[in-house]
Image 1 (cartoon, helix red, strand yellow):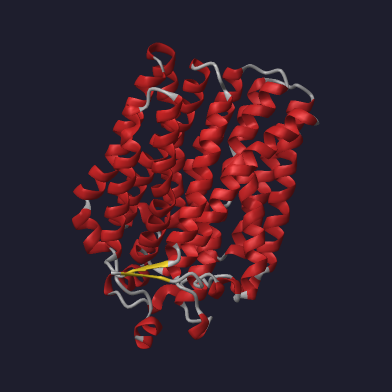
Image 2 (tube, rainbow, N blue to C red):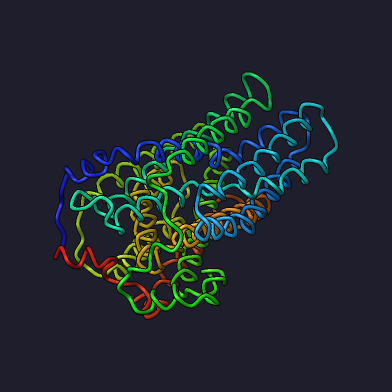
Length: 430
């Protein structure tokens, strides 16, 4: 059923032409992960109310949700080097307006206006995965091509690193230097990352490159121009399922984070939250690394359903949390399944759409998680204020259990829409 290979990451490290775009996307990630929490920190430290800070962050999240997938669609149609710099320039323009307004302590409405263009940010996670998918599936790397699943594991670890460290760096800079220091540093990192990515033309996916896919369904989607002009969320039932799964995943994870902080405050020891979340992040990183070393020989759709059941049951045990010890045990065990879920979901997305739509498809997945992380904590905040942290954990458990329920109900869609192979070249090697 499976095979463990501890040397599997060597294939990724040997692809030297990937170094430039990987570093670029990693730098872009730092800004992406600090954008929302960095905005809240900056706005509140500058003297605005928590309500205004939260509302500004919500406008950024909604703008990203509605605009970023459209940017990725344009990337797939016209190429990264044509779209990414323009979208990045709009993003930085919005950031510059916000920073200037904060420095001058300008009117609150300017913060909301500036937040809208910040949603044009190109999705670095999708851009990096699209390049790797192109290099591997197109045969550019030949027999030295690493395994796609290993690549998704590696990218998942980079996501965890950025998610864990960039918010804390933003908060530290804003607190120690000046309120705008965190987001300013993130903006500089983002610009450097965009430049590195754009200059790395040799690894950029060619628009329409996925026409060699063996699936007749994928070929029809590529040749039918009217279908290609529509959003991949509308044309792919699997992407819609993945969007729903990531929505519930982002929602319960956002509830878990927010309620962990609330429980720590109820217990009178805010440090508990930091310890729990840091340990969970480290466990997730290690699990992601190990998961990438395993070759699993079961259908991709079945892997996704299995991962959904595992993470749903693990985080569904939130209803048992009533103390610091139970919180630590539950979060540490549940963190074992977080990285495998994200890795499997990304791999499933890659098998469900043509290569020329992979950037948009992955961005829609991330948009689902973003939407969930905006919804979950918002509702849990109301629950905590009125009923306490324990009831909020119960709410998170319900959201977590919605993940396996959705996957099981949609298993027929996943089985029908997820291919088992990805290129003619890959078949010829077998």
